[in-house]
Image (cartoon, rainbow over all chains, first blue to last red; front, side, top):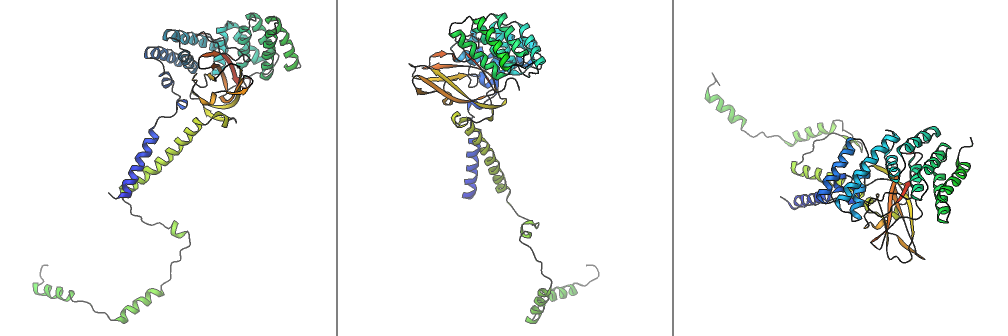
Length: 211
Length: 200
């Protein structure tokens, strides 16, 4: 075999080795690959939940994210599995409340809202109000409702306020402004429920439909 | 051959074996006839387009095909690796990319800011980077006066995130909506990137 042939074969071999080299972790998309960072018993238990979610046509990424978050925060395996199972249940309830047409982000935000204490009925009412107002997605309203509850706005008030904002046609930019204003009011010492209700009236006047 | 005497055959063979002698006049006549024939005229493309037979060695052609295939694959591999490792500060424009979940999504620049006067290091972690505090593109820089900031490309959608201060302290973004997902006893913030009311 001549030297050019040998060189060509060697070059081709080197290229094949380079191509076979593993891609960066950020490019790896398979849930099983991402779960490989967990210890074996936890990985098996979480994978079973992920598999159930897949069979139920629920988003699986939030479950994997929840498990990885626990691992990075130093939680033990039992706590991670409990958290993932709890999230699975919340995702299923959120999808039920928001309808089968809900996006992954909506279901994820809905699960967070349920975890914060918002009832399933509020999610369904929010979806109904969005349809009435011609709004496509309710991801940000759900996120703001969760934030209000987290800042000690009573669940019933937070739910009513956000549903009324959606029904009035307030868009995402004004929702973000509303959340910011309520936060600042509460940080300055205002009563949480009063701040939410007052700022909601202003948001409707500013961002709602004229009707 | 049946019926032909052997002696006749031998005479024919001997005659055929005699060299044929042709004079120079014969050669000239033949060449004159050839030169008088109409010539084929090929254009510049005819040499390329005209079908012709090429002889190749199977082993060399296989190596050539493997090399072309390897070059194409390695080019794609190199582009993918470069995109994955490119600092977020260099891709703050809206770009389509693949998220950790495997979905193709649009990334948008998001500025994360934390006021932490005594911090030595501030890192942003969330579901967009698998909560991994080793990603350089999500490492905040000290802007002075205790203000730490980083602008990173985040896929559109709903996210949960947090700051990690000095590799140990998890801090929620005080200006962002709270996520209320306290399964692990450390708070997170919520982030909706892109138009949530136009949905995906």
